[in-house]
Length: 396
Ligand code: ADP
Ligand code: MG
Image (cartoon, rainbow, N blue to C red):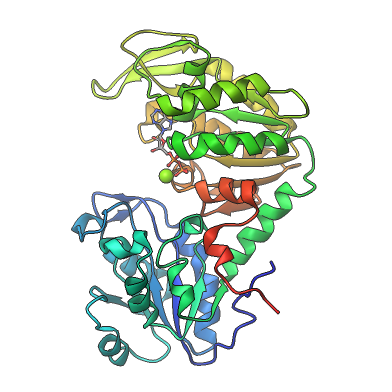
């Protein structure tokens, strides 16, 4: 990477403010659903500790929208990090009222300290310079290791770089290198799989993915907007009306002039979330009026499975269905299996919920890279960089 990394910065015994991605899923308010993101930050933390650094870790959890909310506290993450690191981790709950000096004085040298959820403060997402300055006060050096939030220009990704020498952590560096490898001169066929819920952010990225991939498999909630664009009857499935036009445009260009072929579900599993009932399989063009499409259906699995099996490069973000309920998890589990079993491909899987949906730990052995970023990964593929990466100094 052409940016400074922690190997280019002098770190000995310094205070380091490190942005990490600990946006994990919590169940019952405290049980961590999936700790892959926390585990992936450990090499950087250990590297910095080995240099004698004192660490202040900054992270967010969920969408507390600028105010403290106990259910979004990082306290469970602090406890889990302690276990993983085998060393105490301090917890700093209030860091805006010019308390940096006091809390810095109170921590031991070479210790690890986690700041409470950044998004409890409105200044974080607004990239408020005052807030960024207060955060920056914790470090003498800033390290960004949170690829999954680099597509957001927030105080903790971009703002703080105004105040501190900044470089990429080991995980961020690895993410950038592996994703770059997958998209520059990829082994073909290059198959991109997109799903999940965020139609407004993901659909616009499909246009540029069509210039790079051979096929794009579309599942999850995202597919409903494409089915709508084909004028199918889709019942009460969630559509993003603002994105239907774009979806039509992409469908018209599918497979033409060297562009990727878009593959939509041929059938879906329909149900009704409120009534909590599984209703069965329906063709994608003819979903009953009061039904919601919640997973991809069996014919679609066969088609997707064949294309994934023949791929030489695979990039996947977004679950294929409402996997949080087991009756709608089959599509996502099947795609995981298909990706993991294709040992001839270079495969990258990323995204918060996508990783939460991982059905078997052993799949991680054959998936080449598990990215902390979903939206960030797709945007990086489109633009070749991200605001949080751009903000890091160039290496000289
Ligand atoms: P990621 O975090 O991996 O980038 P997203 O945040 O875009 O993924 O979306 C994940 C969410 O999408 C999951 O919570 C899942 O339940 C939901 N989802 C996927 N498919 C459907 C569907 N067909 N209907 C409703 N929700 C869906
Ligand atoms: Mg998500």
